Image (cartoon, rainbow, N blue to C red):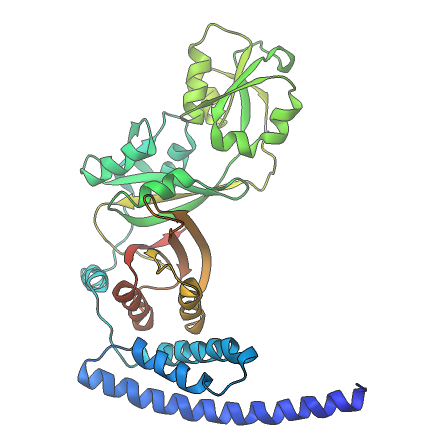
Length: 382
């Protein structure tokens, strides 16, 4: 094939593309009329039976080797058409009714002071994150993350603060798994720079250390430094600050801990080695949760959870809906569902404002069509 021939083929493609573009404009104009009709007659946007019928009709006489591609093309057309129609149609669901009620109550200023539940003890990174989000915080400490969720659910604390992911070690899977068990809403999040320090009793040198206490996330984030220590025992604790407390209370002088700089002053320990994390660009994202759905100022992020049908293309259909509205998906996390065979719950973080009608319509459609849909919150991230 010479250059002249391929240029002729491309001209043919260009001519067909122009025809497709003209037809697409005409199709969307009719879609708009259908959307307006649905508004007047209080009909839903999606019609799965009609979509199936169209795909069966248009692919019937296609060559076998392009039928699946034809199906994908028309599914994309359906997605853009429905996204366009949502500008004219109001879709309702139980979740969106609750969201609209929260917005109707008024967008509020995020509180400066509050009673907040944290996992661990004083000096924990959760406490540092809490102080950043709530300048005047009455902190109640709990042994584990499950207890933090329960404290908020039972009204013992107005808010709870939990780590959800680290820029180097990845998602905090234990928190994601607990999110399916509890009822809560995310009301704010923060990306906190994590700088790990090796602390020990005064006089202890690095050559003396035979055992290091820390949390499993810190083990992952400081793996290179720990490897450099040689044959040193690693003991995993519930929390980095708890590790510091254990070292401070011990009579041993051959142990150390990896934790925050704050723990040195709190527990009377000395810095043996600063900044022992693998990467200086080490951030952990923390979320603040509450029992009641509220929308605070500057809420530009939305988190949702959905159990999608266990069938080919179900996740792709959802992702296409986000793309059709021009929404930026910043995180997609999947976690296996217990008591099922290879089925997963999906978590989505989206940059969007919940006040936008098209965003509300999209979430309402997901609520109406997913096996399970949970609105986790609309909030500001700092």
